[in-house]
Length: 79
Image 1: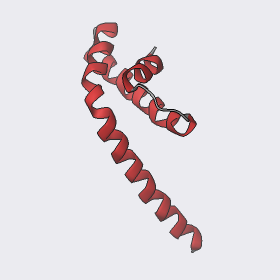
Image 2: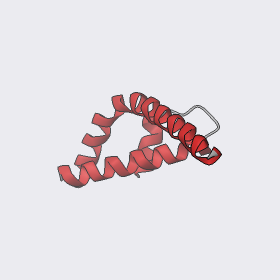
Image 3: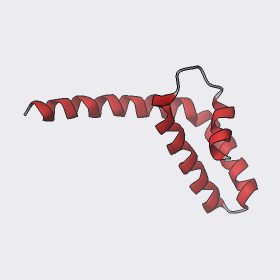
């Protein structure tokens, strides 16, 4: 029973982190999509690349110990 409470607490933390992440990344999403579109010439492939890049950037958050330039970080993940 204690595990369920811990998982519930973890779920709340993850939802908060996801919300904060989306708020901070959203201003860059449009530019990232256009860049991906120029690379692929396909709106579907561009969206796939954007989603893959954002997922990778989210997973890297726990490994980053310094302030990052969001645009440069996203583009380095993409490439």
